[in-house]
Image 1 (cartoon, one colour):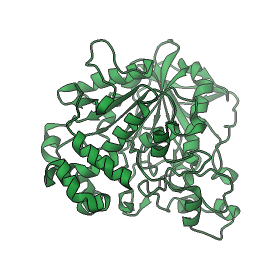
Image 2 (cartoon, helix red, strand yellow):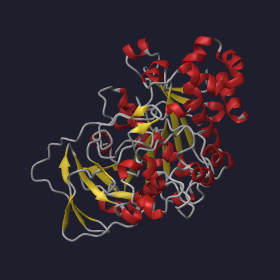
Image 3 (tube, helix red, strand yellow):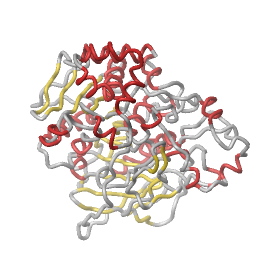
Length: 481
């Protein structure tokens, strides 16, 4: 699985080019000082807000510390620097469109409707990118269409690559998931400040896709995030990925003789050259101080956060054509995953063609989402979905909806009218913890694998999953490992 480090990389939107509304300069007071933001597109935005001190010098590979207060009004009309991007993997250079990146990157952004309403539901978005690339400061993540529905939208940066997830004998303590702790610090900032932006600190929904969805699941499994969010949405967030222990990660780390001073003296770009692979347990790590066990183990034990949970995937996350485009060999990936069970799996799929088309996506994404939903349904309201909306050309050439294709529907940044329906479900969930609302097809709870299909023909409640036989076979394979 080491060749798959690129598979969770999400496309990043171009730099924002908002046209500000004349005479509109919203001002908000926070615990660290006053912010002067920007009114545009029917919303108010406050950007580049430091939620923690710069993680540099002695704060590299340290828990995030409070940001320094400032005097006077701070200009909050431009995004802060993205976190340094990891451009190296087992497949070579990783593409990223981020140009303004720095080790000093712990900034968040707040967007609210252009009115004076209060106690609005808060949605905190964690970006994807394989924990290697990405930023919360882009047009897609700070989408006016979602905000205008009546929510306060928060986006953020968190440390990536080996600056965010690192273990070494010279680093004492029981923390290696520094990027996850950045997310916790941002949630603490939201708790302490979001009321000033019209948000309800007691109604916070955490959501994310890909590595962001993995982060959502990890924070549900982390005692450090307890009480900081009240609903959770994980889009294509895996669920059965391995997680190295802190001791194993320390043994595998390079620069064995380096001291802490040596490590913190390394050039940051050099640190980011070290590959990070979500499929081999590099992230998230089981470090005790943040994540007590793997996500799957925590959910299986019933120890995750007891909050309403919405989880799902696209119906064809990574078809062979996408895998090949990433430089991987699909047949070898399937063989590595299936092992000696390949013949039984082909029988469960009904044909070699169906097995070859769906098995990788099912094993890495679809079955783990079903597993997390079934486990969490024992503790709190849970809703499972499968997204299959794609253009006729994509359906003809690929055969389904691919990884990350549902993001634009969640944010309302597509002209497809079906995004309106999906947005209604998500905002209802963020408001009440239940996506069901008047006039919409009922979203069932995942009893027996029931789910809502988000299809080209609209939402369809699925009581008996037609994929159940093959997903049961994938589940048996996963549990036998």
